[in-house]
Structure formats: structure tokens, C-alpha cells
Image (cartoon, rainbow, N blue to C red):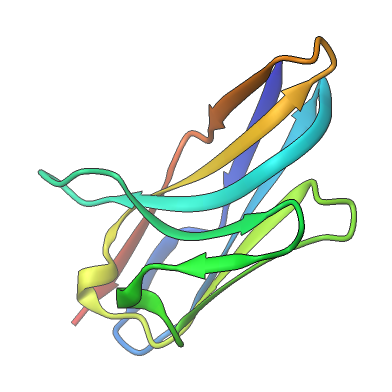
Length: 120
């Protein structure tokens, strides 16, 4: 099994910054993809930013130039630096990992979610 533990959410004023962290642990053989998704009340869960095993990144258009995804050298901790936050960024943010476990099967895993609230 793989566990994802998130931290870093909170309440911030518009224009402020937050950094989210997500640490993966467990029976991981390799990680194919790591990403951050968010879900606002009444809306679907959407990809915010992702990073592949090779280091390629992609971002939702709404966060390009404001949010930056990165990971540690061991590829076990994922970060999301969020700058110039807007009220519309308010949502529960979820860490997602697609990983191959030691049994050689590949699964999707999700963190518990962390609330980000941006006040105007």
C-alpha cells in the first residue's frame, strides 16, 4: 500500500502565497506521475499541476505563471508553490500519485485533501 500525507493548506488573503506538500510512503517501486488536483464545492475535481517521472510538468491554464510544482530528489515529496492567490483558487487540494508497487501492479492513490481558502 501507498500512503500520501498532505500539509500546507490554510486561509490566506488574495495576493498571498501558500505552499502545499505531499509525502508518499509505502511499498513503492516507482512513481509514474505526481500531481495536484482541486475540487471546489459543487464542481468536479480538476488537475491543477502535474509532473511526470521524467520531470515534465503541466499546468491548468488558470494557474500558469502563478503556481509551480516540484518534487524532492528522491521523488517522494511533492510540492505546490501557489503565488498571487485569488478567491477562485479556493478549493480542497488533493495530492495524486500514479505508482507501481512492489507487486508490479500500478495504482492511483489520493491524499486526504487540504483546504485552501483565499479571502478577497
